[in-house]
Length: 299
Image 1 (cartoon, one colour):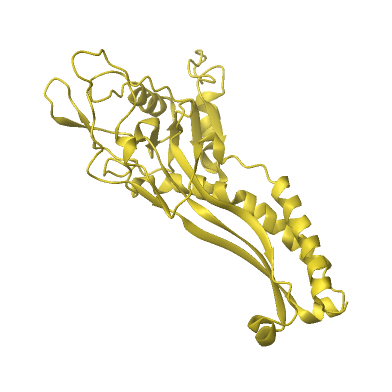
Image 2 (image 1 turned 90 degrees about the vertical axis):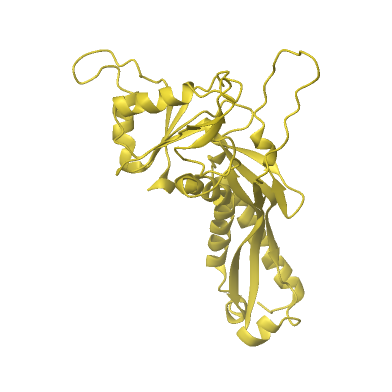
C-alpha cells in the first residue's frame, strides 16, 4: 500500500471502527459503586460533602451550615494509549494485527473508569476524604449533640487479612465518585510527511486519550474490614454502618446492600451471604442480605 494521506486516513477509519467495537464490547461495572460527576474545569471541589443533607423543624431563622475549612479537591488527570505502526508494514500491507490492537485499545478505554474506581477502594486507608481523615478510618469526627463536642466514629476494622468492603449504594451519591472531564476518543496522525516522529522512527501514531479521576464521597456509606470474613465480623461491620448518626444525633438510615470482596474471599463471602443454613444447621439470617460482588482489581 502506498503511504499517502488518503490511505492513512482510510487506515485510521478502520482502526477507529475497531476501537469503537472494542469500546462497546466491554461491560463496565464501576457504576455499581460510583456516581459519575461531570467536570468542565481542571478540578472539582467537593467541600460541600461536609454538609450531609437533612431536614429539621424550622424554628426561628434558617440554620445555615458553613462549608468545612478543609477542602476536598479532585484534580483531573490525563490518560493515554498509543499504537505505533511502522511505515514498512503499511507499504507491505502487513497491518492486520493492528486492528486487533485497536480493538484492545477500545476495550482498555472502556475499562478505564473501572480501573480508577475499583482500584481506589484499597487506597481508602491512606487517602484523605472531605473531613480531613482517611476515607477508611477509626476517628471520623462527628459532633455529639448533647455535648457539642466531636466524637470519633469508625468505618474501618483493622486486621491482618485481605480487605473486604460493605457499601450502601442506594443513595443519590454512591460511596465513590467517577469524575469525567473527557471521554476516551480515537485520534490519528494522518499526514504522511509532516511529522518529526515519522522522520525519526519511520512509524505512524494512532491513539486515544481521556481526562478524569476517581475519589471518595461520604465515608458513612462504606466500611472496610481486614478482619476475617465470617458471620460475627460481617454482623459487626453491618451494624456499625446502620448506627451512624449525623451531627444532630439523627440516624442516617444507612443500610449496606453490597459486599465487595477480592477473588480470594469469594468462597468466604458465599458462606456468609448465600448459604441458606449455617454449618450447625441453623437458618442463615444473613442470606442475601447484601449482594456479593467479586472485584478482580482487589486481588
